[in-house]
Structure formats: structure tokens, C-alpha cells
Amino acid sequence: MNTKGYVKLGLAMALASSALAGCGGGEQTKSGSESGGGASGQPVKLKFWTNARHDADLMKTKLEEFNQKFKGKIEVESQIMTENYEQALQTAIQADEAPDIFNAKMKLKLEDLVKMKAIEPLDAYLTPEVKSRFGDNLLKVDRQNWLDGKTYSLPNYGTTWRLIYNKDLFAKAGLSEPPKSMAELVDYAKKITEAGKADNVYGFALNMKTPTAAFERGLLPMVRLDGKDYYDWKSGKYDFEVLKPYVQALKQIVDNKSILPGYESLDIDPLRNQFAAGKIGMYFSLSAEPGVYDTQFPTKINWGVAQVPTLEGGTPKGANYINGGASWLYMSGKSKHKKEAWELLNFLYSDDVLVPYYEQGKGISVVPSVLAKAKEPTLKNFKEFAPKDDVMWPAYPVHKLEGKPWQNVISETILGLMPLDKAIEDLNKRYNDGLNNEEKAGNVKRIVEPNFDPRSQIKK
Image (cartoon, rainbow, N blue to C red):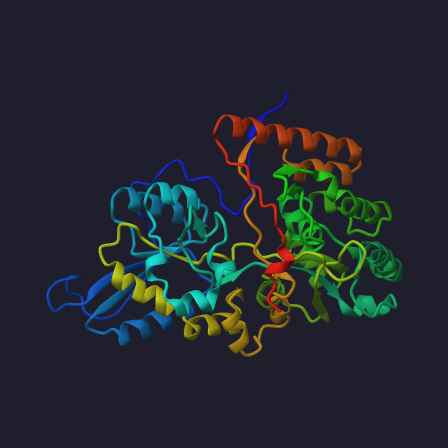
């Protein structure tokens, strides 16, 4: 019997349904006067909330610089809360006690925050200089930082996706460079496995325990680099047929026994551990990997990073995608000090903050001025994740779906549990029926972009 679920295809997740009674614990830092904010002759006090711990050292330094710069005028108190951030924030919003500035990288949807009037549109604050620095491609990413003609956040960093490979294992197999086509991906995986058989080395690995994560890291980037997608943006319909040749290649690697055994239930960290130990030739993953192999799984292997292959190996016709790059910080729609809150936002989005953010490996910048000014990051291979053939794609429509999500169905074809053609037919019917029904009910708006061309967004 089919089960009802929600197809969650964009970057946002459903708004938390329950709120905590309080805001929970966290780390706080503050400096300056302890006197009441807004009082005559006293600095305006701003609250800054974040769920990010990875950038805490840099942000602490920069917020202290801001407090010093605006000493006697504005004072920022920051709080880090990595547990129950969304619930705490929702509680604060409902109690009209939301922080003036808060991190936008979370599970609360832009659409829901806008409906709650919880976040402030920034258009009135965007000077010609700011608009020129970011450009419409970064300021108007539909349903990510832009909604109904208004911009609610500015970009800083995002996640990019690459092929990670072991250069020594490539050399041992007689390979001098990473694969550029799907045929080479299959062939190289086989050659590496054969060359490393005595050492239990395998040419390829896939973290299939969570199909959504596995295909987000590799399948979708390859499809999009070729300018395709399972949602046809020009017609506003689903067409999973575009996945077929890429899935067939992955299935061939499995059939060739060129994949790390246990892939069916393999999670990403055990995979990384095996790669760090020199047992995997290549796999797909994200821009967190340089930090992983610097601290979590320190390794001495000679590893490299390359753009994912295209189907035929030629010049990309599309663009790989950047996940979560359109937004970083929100201004509260209920802030009583919006002028001062914009001063803080303007400071945090300056190159003086964003350049070291990238240089120190806190995140892959998507801001052209930052990438142009920044020195080479010290973290090994971090620079290889910087956007090149990568852009921010629009968010998929979100609607009800009967049955299994596409990632689970495709994983079943790779495991040999379902014929691929039958799976594609099933997915096309269920996804298009779901979208059609929800559109007729007035619950979702079909997204159609007749002139859609992700390649055109790449700045030459």
C-alpha cells in the first residue's frame, strides 16, 4: 500500500511544528556597556543568534571589531546554539523577542518566515554599490533568498560538489588524470580495482545508506553539469528519463565489482575513513572534505579534487550546482533597531569579513569580489571547490507525493531490485500526478522558466 509523504526537493525543510518553552542553552559573547539599549546616550543593543560553530573564532573577532568601531553607538551580543536552534528561534519569534540578526542556514523555510513577517526585506537598504557587487544572479535566487519580488538575505558561502580521488592509486593503475566522461568513470573504477586487488583497493565508493545524500553528491551534479535535470524547468514537468545513462553507469560499476563492498548500507564517514586509509580510488562528495581530511580523518595519501564528469566528456553544457549559497543572515522583521541592524549586516557582508571567511576555510565563497581578492586558502584542496562551472539553481517545487521518493527508487535499480525503465515510468507518473493534483488544489505553483539556461549564469 502506498504511503503519503511530502516530496522535499528544495533547500528548505518543513517549519518545525512545535516550539520550546524557552530558548535553551548556548554560548554567549558580548562586550561594551551593560546599560540598557536605546536609552538616551547609551548604545543600541543588538542580539545576534547563530547555529554555526565552525566559524565561531572568526565571528567573535569580527563582532569585537564591530563593537569597537561603533563603540558608544551600537553593541552586539552574540549567542551560539547548535541544539534546537529552529525551535528556540520560532519561540522567540512568536513571543516577539527574536534576535535582530540571525543565521539563515537552517530548516525553517523562507516562505514560512515571510508569512510570519519574521524577516525583513532588504531591498530598501541595498545601495547601488551593494547591488553591483552581488548582482541579480546572487540577489534574486527564487525561494532561496528572494520571494515575491523581495530580497531577504545576501549570499556568503555554499556547498559545491566534486569528484574526490586518490592520485597514487590512479598512478598505480596507469591513469594520469581524473575521468571526464561516464565511460571513463566506469573504466577507471575497473582499472583501479584490478591494480589494487592485492591490497583490497576498490576503484569507486558510494554512500548508499542514505540515497538522498548519495545522489545529491554525485548523480545530480553530473546531470546538471550537462544542463539537464529531472524537473524540466522549461516545461514545468518531471522527466526522470534524463537520469538513465548516469544511473546505468553507476549500475555498471556495481556489476563490475569495482565498488567498495557494503556500499548498500555505507554511510559517508565510514567511506571517508576507508578513503583516508588508501582503499578507495574515487567518490563524489562536497566541499567539507578538506576539513574532514585535515582534522576528522587526517591522511597522508596524495588526494585530489576534480569537477564531476559529463556524459560524453566534452565541455559542460550546463553547470554544477551550489547548495545553500544564496543566504547567510536574516534581519528580524520585528527588530526595533533596523537601521543599526543593517549597519551590522553591512559590516558582516563586507569583503573585510567575507575574504578571511573564505581564506580560513570557513566556507566556499560564491561572491565574485571575495574570490578575486582572497589569497589561496591554506586548507589542502579547499580552493578546488571554489565555483567555476557552478551556479545556484532554483529550488524545486514542493508538493505531496504518493509512494517512495525518487532517490530510493533509483537506489533499488542500482541494487538490481527493479528494472530502470519501469522505475522511470513509475517516477514520471507519480511525480507529475502529485504536482498536477497539488496545482489544481491551489497548494503549489508550477515553476516554468521558458528561457532557463544555467550556463548563462557563469561569469566569464
